[in-house]
Length: 402
Picture 1 (tube, rainbow, N blue to C red):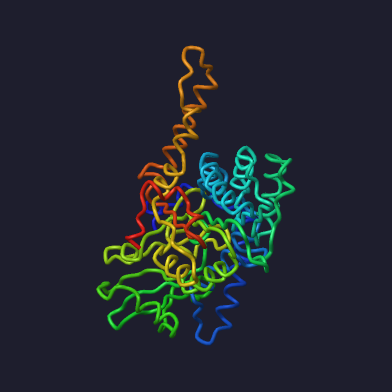
Picture 2: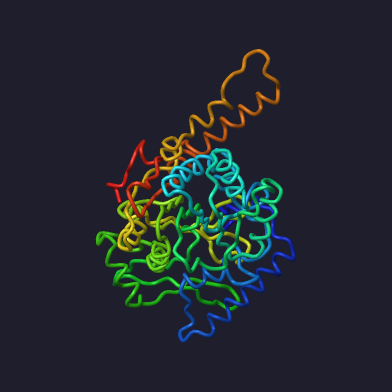
């Protein structure tokens, strides 16, 4: 790839220590490829190692990931209004239940947990426990620091988990930008049918190789449209349904919410989406080369929300709604929350107040505009009982598209 066409050409290069770290992870992955019978490692396993290999994977190691100094920014870091909208809807559900817990899956920097706890305290609807399932020791430490600094009086309500609770949960399960980081298989339609795309080795470099799909992948491919053209590439998450069904079984009574970028199946596997949705993120640059600097960049794939709906309704949960992030936040009270900050106090307004109003307006635009996060990010909700519905779906529910 020429420098003119390289999206990382103007990115700060990794430091020598970071490159050495990546090389250690590359050696681990290469050893696993060499240990296979055919020199082909499923892309889902490659992605799992690149992101989660203990001490070496992107989410397991110590490099900064979130915010301006990291590789990408999530909605809770853009504005506390995002988390406050979620908190107010969680408060509705906790009130209906008469109490309960909140379980956040993969809490990132801890900002969302801090803002939600602060808002729930204001509403007098604090959960009995705020549980965080976090497998990364580095992220867990950062979350603890964030909560201790921002809401020290509430930090004792937070408990970190290494695995899902053994006892049924009563309350709310939240997953913001979690599903897109689950390992996926990659496939390509050839002149003779589907091929699974895998990681192979060309000397010391990773390369793409292919093989016949196994039975489980073949069954998943049968759900795709038959009109997809030769050369069509895409992703399939064959591990999604079992993982979601385990979560559904753990939710004894309450509601579940997922926020991520994705599409219904008919749009996800559209014939014109020729190259799939896999994206890598490094220093706020997006590109499509997953072999580059393993362990130093994020690897994601968009979410098939039809698959999410099928898995959780098959597990016995009721589909509560599906909509865009913009409609969910507006339906959940974003305008009311932002109203005070955006109101004009008149001639006596200070320079700091002006800056704050401008900042809030910019935050709302990033969260809701179609050209920002408003349309690309979707929200899907489930509940064990219709009485535990999320009010954010009241403005516009697109569940019929799933």
